[in-house]
Each structure stands twice: as C-alpha cells, then as structure tokens.
Image (cartoon, rainbow, N blue to C red; front, side, top):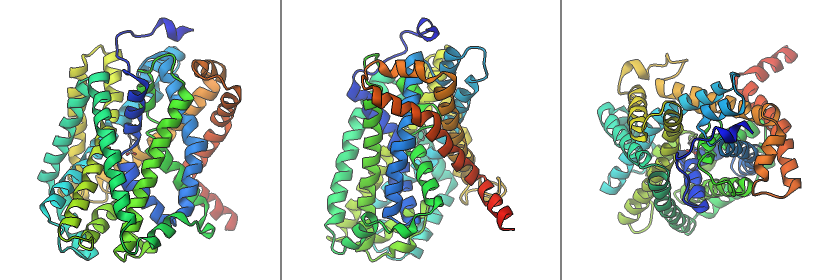
Length: 473
Ligand code: PFF
C-alpha cells in the first residue's frame, strides 16, 4: 500500500489509548455540548430532539468519525497529506486544505466566545450576578460585555495564548497531558452541577421537559438540526479526527475508540441538559419559550443564580463552576482546531511545531479581531452586511456549518467510494474482528451518511423550501 512507504516517522504518537480517547473526547466536548446542545434542545421541543440527536450520533456521526480515524491512521499524516498519500495527483487533497482553513477560521471566533466564558467566570466569581433576576438585567450585562471590544480582544488573546502553549508542547506532553488533567476535572465539575441542579426544589418540571418526548414536535427540521448538531459536537468534517487518528498506534481498535469518543461526547451533552433544564425549571423559567443561541447561557443562566439556595454563595459557586467548566471544555476543543493546521505545517512545510503553532495561532488571532468587535465593538463588523449578518455570525455560518457539512460529505464519499471500502475495511480490521460491524459501517458510510448530509445541505440552502414552493404554487 502506498501509504505505508510514505509514513512520516517521528511526528509523535499518543502515549496510551486512554490518552487518545481523552484528547479526542476533549476535542469533541466543547461549547457545542454545554452551550449549543441545550439551546438546540430547548428550541426544538426538548426530549424529542434528544432522541433524534442520539440517532444522528449513532447513524451518521459515528460512521464519519470512524472514516476520519481510518484515513488518519492509515496515512499517519495531516488531512492534506493524508489525501495526497491515498490518492496521488488528484484534487482530493483540497478536502484536507479546506479542513486546515476551516480549523483556523473556526478557532478565530470560537476563541472569542471562549473569551466571553472566561469573562463570565470572572464576573460570576466576583458576585456581579448577585441580585440579577430578570432577563432584561442579564441581557444588559451581556450586551455590555460583548460590546466591550478591547476587553474581548484581551480575553481572545489570552485564550489563544493558552491554546498555543498546549499545542507547542506536542502530542504527548502538550495535548495528551492537558486533556488528561482537564477532562477528569471537567467531568467532576459537571457531575457536581448535575447533583446540585436536580436536587433543587421544582426541578422535576425541567426533567419532564428534557426526558419525556412529545412526538408531535418531531418535524424534518428537528431531524436536520439533530444531524447538524452531531457533526459540530463530534468535531467532524474538517479533519480533526484525521489528525488525531494519525497519532494512533496500529493495534488500536478504531471502532471501539470512536464509540468511546462519541459516547463520552454524548454523555456530556446529556449531562449539560440535566444541569440546565432542572435549574431553569427551579427558577420558574418558561421552558417552552427559552431564547435560543448565545442568549440561553449568557442571558438566562445568570438570572437563576440569585434563586439558588445559600445566597449569595450558592449562586456565586454555581455560576463560577459552570463558567469554569465551559472554559475548560472550550480549551480542549481549541487545541484540536489549531492542531489540524499545525500538523499540516509540520508534515508538509517542515516547520517546527513551535513555529507552526505561533504563526497559525497568530493568524487565527488576527482573523478573530473582527469577530471580537462584531457585537457592538465596531460598527463596521456589527452591521449586518456580512452575508446579511454580523461578522461573527457570518464566520460561524460559513465555517461552523457549511464547511463542516460539506467536508463531512466529501470525507464519506472519499472513504466509501474513492479510497474504497476494501482498503478502509482493511484498516479497520487492524484491531477489529467483527465482520458484521464492519459491513454495517460500509453500508452507512456509502449510502446513509452521504444521503443524510445531502438532505441537510439542500435544506439549509433553502432548496427544499423552494421546491415545496414550486409544488404548492
Ligand atoms: N466539537 C467542538 C464543540 O462541540 O464545541 C467544536 C469543534 C472542535 C468543531 C473541533 C470542529 C472541530 F474540528
């Protein structure tokens, strides 16, 4: 096989399987789980969305993750190099290049939002939310926070520096070590918040909303939202898992590793819902009409701190722990966003890891400046003339939604049809012996996933609505 001859030696490997799983789960677990998942669940009717999401992870997310890991481990290369090794002299390397660009681009605004979480951690610890009981008050604080351009830039810089320091440390001593420390802390904090939240008086209404499905709310939009959320949350579509897979040892079972990563990611998202909804219900919030998006965490959550027991400390501790958790989760994701580009520069351009991390981190920081100014900091970037949105929303839509979805589609087509299921299965076979599971994977990656992704793309481009309009008209 071509790939084996061209393996780049000495580029690093995970110390252990647990180390890999914690790092990959760290990449997956991020703002997407703790901030976006509960917001999507709230928007799409609670428990019905949860069920759809679980289906999306199993039927679409997991197969794509396995495909990415297989491509990475077979070639032991960054996403661009991996496609070059498997299909020389074809344009497939562009899929990897799209991944590298997408990583730097998502990192640029993700780091700004991560900076807000650090800002909110400081506010919560200082007791700034004590006495905040109405959504209007919390909204004012949020608007003032995100409009403060220079403060946002400082926090954005801080987050980017933290990310670069870890990535410079390399695979074992940087990413793996940081994930080994942060992930257990994150799990412990989250478990503590769940226990606290569900023991609050009045929490049951939140549990019912979250766990008792109302099937009448199940629509195609809910299904599409579930699949989209699964990609973002599992870090798929931009080669992050190709990169992490490229540092995996030969004997690891890719299917069980992927199942662990997806399982942990899903558990954390599920637990985040168990914190948010019972806490909201206990504070008397109207669960059917929660705001979506950024509003949920940044403008609703602070209003419930004051209704926590043991005032003011109950609220200060809950708020600080929550935003610390969110910051840690974001950090284990930002390192993977930077690592995709770094692995490319190290493999293909022969840069040192230090140079690659510093230059790509700096580029992403600069690209993030307009995003840091896009919520009131500067009129130019706040105005809705970036694809009809503010600059940050436009970046998030182009790279966080379209680019990942298109990338995931191309990766499926590549693994299922171009590289081909035979070599892909041979790669999976290193460490996995169940022919049934392997066959099932090829069925999903060749037919089910590409179709599902095409439907999402068509829907999000408005094509389905346009078609329906044609039929109705
Ligand atoms: N999975 C991360 C989250 O849920 O916040 C976001 C992300 C990280 C997406 C890395 C893509 C990626 F490559």
